[in-house]
Structure formats: C-alpha cells, structure tokens
Length: 189
Image (cartoon, rainbow, N blue to C red; front, top):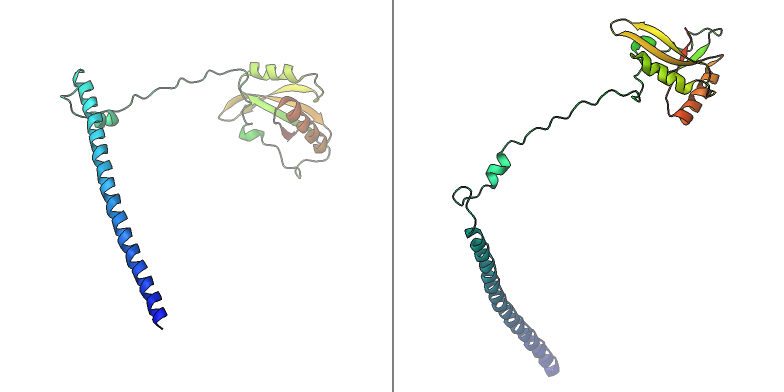
C-alpha cells in the first residue's frame, strides 16, 4: 500500500512538473512573440517611411490626399462598336413564316419534295449560293422568287424535286456534311 502511495505521489509530482514546464514554455513564447512583433512594426515603419520619402519628390495631385475613390466613381467612357458590314458569306436567313413546309399528312403522295437551303432578300446572294451548289450532285439547284406579305420579295435557293421525303432527307444529310448547310424539307409548290 505504501508503494501505491509512492506511485500516486510520483504521478502527481510529474503532472505538476508538466504544468509548470508548460507555463514556462508559454511565457517564453509570449516574450519571443513580442520581440518579433516589435521588430516587424519597426520594419513596417521603416518601409512606410521610405515610401513617404519617395513620394515627397513628386507633386501631390490634390494636396496629398487619397484619390482612389475619385478614380473608382468616375464614369467610364462607353465605346461604340461599329456595325458589321453585310457580306455575301452571311448565313442564310431563316425562311419567312409563309415558307414553312406543309405537314406530311397534308401532302398528297403525288407531290414532290424539295430542299430549301436559304432565303435571301438580295438576289445576288441567292445566285452565288446557286452557283456554289449547282452540279455537285445534290439535285437540280434553282432560285424561286416569292412575295412575302409585309416583308417583301425573297429569293429562295432550292434543290430538287425529290420523289419522296426520304430521298430529300438523305440529300439534306449529305448537304449538311459536304457543305455545312442546313436545309428544310419542303413540299414542292
């Protein structure tokens, strides 16, 4: 039993010694930290003094005050972007509302189909696309003139006629892969 007391006393002594040692290490850390902090303040102070000395040689803009708030609140000039000129390589316009293809059910079996590749208000653009497509194996290329109420005259570039919708869709896929042009399958007028 006396051995247990001595063991308990040793544990208490070692615990107390550990607490004291920890306190001493903490106090030493605080003192070292203060010394480092003083050194840093002086270093920062020295750095700021050098900046002030450098700026003394330059004229102050508004009496030496800060001006960043004025710079940030000043309105920025708006740049105008010039309009792009119309080019013949312009993507084909979507067909006007009147040029929508009729539903398949409405088309009689005797009607032929066509591919509408583009619709332009400028006939020269339509002719250029026509010459690009003619003789490339997509079918007969032609320009169809159409009056669209409220919008004017359109020149539609079409391929075909094709005997059925399936044949028109095959040529449509071939045109997309070969020329990069999307076309609409329409019922021939």
